[in-house]
Image (cartoon, rainbow, N blue to C red):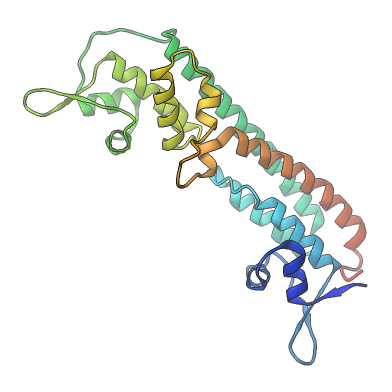
Length: 253
């Protein structure tokens, strides 16, 4: 049986010793035994468990409870409940597949809206409330999208905002992509790209942050992140099967 000190575990994974202690504190790895001097003694099981946790959290997909599912899976494995951990991982993979399908469907809808396939020209001029009601979104969502530059709204002489057919089409695109959990930054990037180049690849535009972006979130490259998370989840499933076989009887081996 191999044993490790906190600093050695940290060095294996290239993390700070405090991170190892944090993983222990929140239950992502089991509490190690301690020597008479109080020093923690980690085992090979801790190494495998920490590897599993790091893989699970490498891509932090947050929508629809995905992060919680990953945390629950890690904690189940930490408690040696491998059957539960495997079941949770399989459910996690199914959810990731659904999220990818939703993301792809939103792009397909966007392509059709941009091509004019879904365009219904009414000629109507709508108020903000009428627009929100038509699209079944909140007025706060409309304000937020406008404040973040996704839409520039015309105003009447009295200062009231008015929405035309082209605005409605753009808002339908935004709504569809937001429902699939694309970030506002990713949507704005895509809209700006197709405005300057109508033949641009929508999928590439929405999934490729600019090099000079200060902060890039997972949802700024949603398609890539979901695919990466699913790949990691498949690796976790394989690892859990091996851990179940090796550590079910004695986690210290």
